[in-house]
Image 1: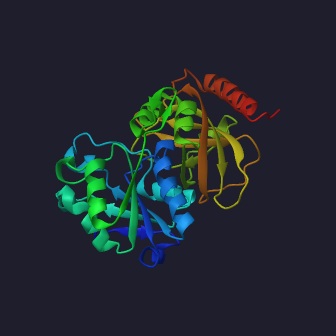
Image 2 (image 1 turned 45 degrees about the horizontal axis):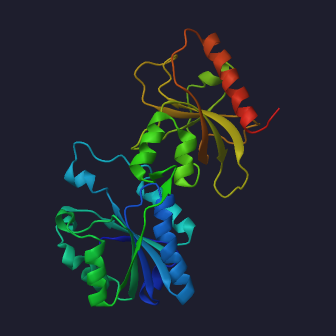
Length: 314
């Protein structure tokens, strides 16, 4: 890390006053495999009265090494930090991944960390983690460097589900195919997004399905279609049942960018300007073009009935 790194979390000052247990990785998605690494650092820190932090990187290294086809992230840096802090980390350190940083020799990585974080006591990584220029560094090199520098190194084995290792790439593929339930099981939480309600064309009102329009432009675009979701204003507690369409609305528009539209299955307490959190629970169907608004209305009725059944609403 360097002076450009950003630190968020309530325990930022603890990084220089208590033994520091540091989980390192990109952690896109903060899935169950990532949690095995991060929670090991948190548990060890709690046992010895130390501080637990996470070192992650932004942008994704692929933006630097193959800008023509970068990895599309499941979570942006802000939501990734939120999830890591929610696990119990005292702080999240986001290191800008620049050409200069990428050129650091692998042998210099841990000594530089110790220089920047004098209280560093232990680091935690996944078993296949690589670092340093040309990705020369591996866990064996990190262990040797840690022994020489008085830093404990812990390597977490990969976590598997259904006979396959859990990985961000596996989750990305599931989301793109609309296999939301399987993606959520690998994430260990419900896929979601957040945004501010903005005024729309109010076409939904004319066919009996008013919607909340929430601008959202993720790097990784999930399968376009209709989903069972739940919605809340962060901090207000109660989740409200809803059905959502994420798509280009081909029945009423041509060539539009995908947009998230949410229809609540209960009375809607939200208005334009509200900041909302949306959790995606189940994929219902792909988006498609209907021949008429009446045909669209009939399908939306079916979608809402399926969503009500999901929530056991009558």
